[in-house]
Image (cartoon, rainbow, N blue to C red; front, side):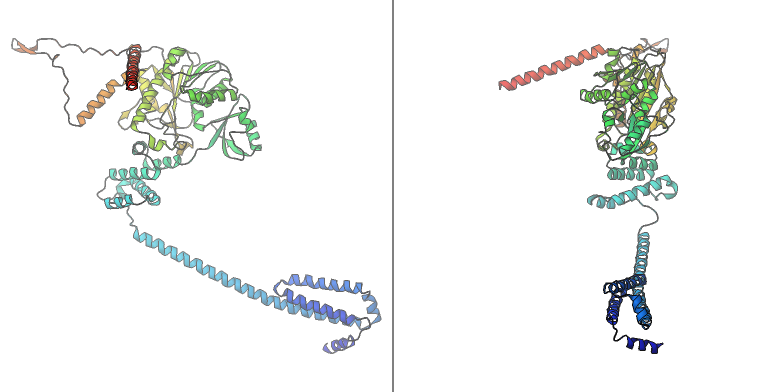
Length: 614
């Protein structure tokens, strides 16, 4: 085949129509393309080669040359063209070999890099395993409490939160299985004290609050509760059924870019919001009163109250109006609602929400809750809702200042106020009401002193009984707590916790008034200062006994003298009966206070006048 090809090439040396020069241009283009395509794929080379043939055809067409005529005129042209095809195929094969060699070199480089990465990853894993083994060898298997020297050294350094967290978990693990994991020579009290100190440092609570929580919950559950307090609760909406339905409201808010779901099976009007592209408190629907921003736990007291249409209901602490407007919606704007709020600054938000949500059956008042029986009349209402002011230990996620601001004195002050308000609420309810006669007491606190203790006090002072709240979930209230023993029916109360129910800490109790009779000996129970005087005296006596002091009652003047009659020892004077102390009435107490205030004002006025004359 080589001979004919050479002869054909010789004949092509002097063509008539300058065709060899065209072919040389084509060959030059092919050589250029071979250089350009040395690093590309074989498919790209084929496309470009066909493109060069197309360019050659276009050039032939432009020069006025017809390939068909050339083939007919020159019998050797066919051989020439075939020879060019063979050469082209040979060139293509050469370029293919070059590209294959280039690809092999690229693959080789990638493989080397991959091997290097694998080796580096393996080396890192070996180093990590060696470091882990070193840490395991350094840390003993048995957890040991830090010594006094270690604690002193730790106190001089900035707090190490990771170390504190690890120690808290280890102490909790030991306390859950104390017999098998305890350190020799250490008591449970040592672990508990260390746990309290670490919780105060890690979470930022004061000692009083941590001590109360440790006494209320098991240590494992206590950690879950404290972690839940660090996270915000979900944003919830309550649909205003006076203006819209939950399905319609959800559809409109979804179209506005609000991601929400129904709250739960226990609520027919609640919606929980996950995220929103618009301010959820400034939508046209909010301004129109179609919904109220309200925590899920605030639904519970109203659901327990279960108001009926055409009833007379009192909300003793109504601001900012979430519960009041919910009651109005359930009553369908019938009956009468007395919305009372003692703080004048909060009346604006209360009245604004009442107007915005279209409530028309509510009367807003500004009285002290303890005086409401005098204002509205005793035994005049069907139902009363008392969401009592409290310490706020159930809403720490909203107000972190509670961690450090509350003390035993603050709790005691709240308890005193709550007892007075609850007795006033009971006195306003008519036990003969055909549909009512119920009192609902609720707080946003988890303290036993503010919840079960207050209810137990009301059961002793008034003719009431506990009834089921009508809530299918929630934990029952405490019957016994440390040395306290409460009424067995306190199981009907309900407690709610953030780590269990994903809502604010809350307490709900429902009371039924059995009779309107009020014990005569207990008429002054709503006067706080006089009421607790015996308890305070008893507490002081106990404190003095603990200090080793001896208390002797001064009864010498009443002590009978002994004599002998017929050889038998008898008292000359008979025993005197103990006279029951008569407590002053409310009017007398109020009068004494006013006189004291007046005297203080006069003293201050005299002091100012004396300073002015100087």
